[in-house]
Image (cartoon, rainbow, N blue to C red; front, side, top):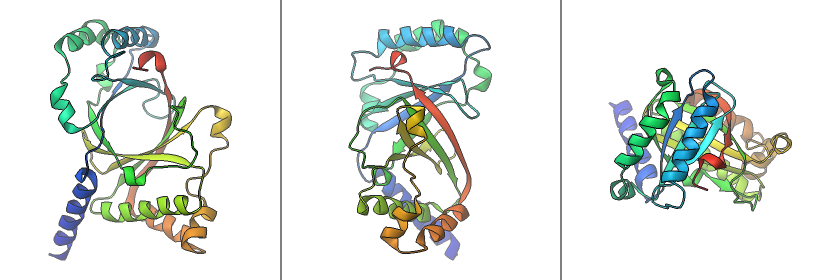
Length: 249
């Protein structure tokens, strides 16, 4: 009985965390090219984007090439909406769908398709001490699958991480997103942008023991890492490259 109450309270806390304020909604989908058709698919996507998404703030679209990991070679398309209500105001247009079906799908390997995902940013778990708000060329994405009934603990632990960066005036930059539809909903992405491979080699450690211990006390970083390892099923990391020519801007 106690376990059921705990799970229910965790779920309620999680819903409050996600939906307690209006926030941008991100719709995502990976598109895998057929063998030897990467260039043709990207050219078709670029033409479609210029025709339907450039210059139209109501239908923004951003594209990324996955360059490491299981989806390597795929193009990730991300369409942000200012709110859930915007999805009602600006539904996908039939002419846009028809164009995609006619000119892009012939180059797509639909056997690898996993459908659309919907994500929300966990704004309380995002931080930018770099003073740089530019859209950089690359993103390191760390994917966490949280164990069932452990989301409340995840939220509390992530709060401590952000607190450490704030109190030490860290120059790090990272954002967290949670998938709310399109698969397991206790899936988290932590995104760290960088502009070159040289920058990648010099990224500030998000989990720096010094940053954490200076805020929470000696030895607290190891305790925190041990707690994290006990509440996640897996952790994977991959890199995406932003493609401006396949994006709204």
